[in-house]
Amino acid sequence: MDARIFANIDQLSSAALDGLLAIVQESVAQRGRFAIALSGGHTPAKLYTLWAQSERAGRRTPWDRVHLFWGDERFVPFDDSLSNYRMTREALIDHVPIPDANVHPAPTGLESPEAAAQAYESELRKFFGAAPPAFDLQLLGLGPEGHTASLFPNSPALEEKQRWVMAVKAPARPPDRLTFTPAVLNLGQNTFFLAAGADKRGIVSALRKEPDSGQSSYPAARIRPSGPVIWFLDAEASG
Ligand code: 6PG
Picture 1 (cartoon, rainbow, N blue to C red):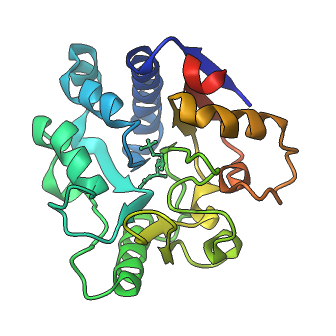
Picture 2 (picture 1 turned 180 degrees about the horizontal axis):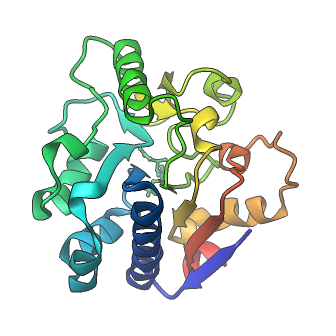
């Protein structure tokens, strides 16, 4: 585990932002764009706020080349307090000059989670064309039982080899969610896991001991892309 340990969430977020900005510049130089799969929950909110508000980020982010996607989303309306899109809109999107066409939220307004998953996969296929869905950077969180995105232990989505987006039932509120599958997440050019707080210490310790077999019962341990994976941890989560 390539872990970087920080005293608190502010320093963790600032370091993650520096890493993100370096990848923005590399991706735009190499591919003309920066496609990021954002994570939800609480941990990344500070990073999104810093990305929106810091002067260094504004100077180094060509917003017209940035494309935002979400690695998972709760099947709730865009303005629901549980929506990952809403959290990101409030922390980041409302404060930066990113073109509307570059913001790709999961279509949670459709009639069912399955319809939304199929539509979101179509949007990914349209964006990546014939190329594999290899995000320039994917941000991932970590749940205390080892979930990441909305891939929870024993989820059928963990074994999916073809589909890129699936509708899943999560043992969390709200249960209906959309998630990228490992078929996408294992292609990431760069991956940042962000984990903070004492409630993550147990799972971080377990993951550190987990053999790199690809068969782990912890979904986070099943994300093993060929590109760099960096863990940004605060002191409480790192133990
Ligand atoms: C979600 C997330 C999920 C999250 C973890 C950690 O939609 O909830 O994408 O995978 O990253 O549950 O959440 P916290 O950052 O709130 O601890």
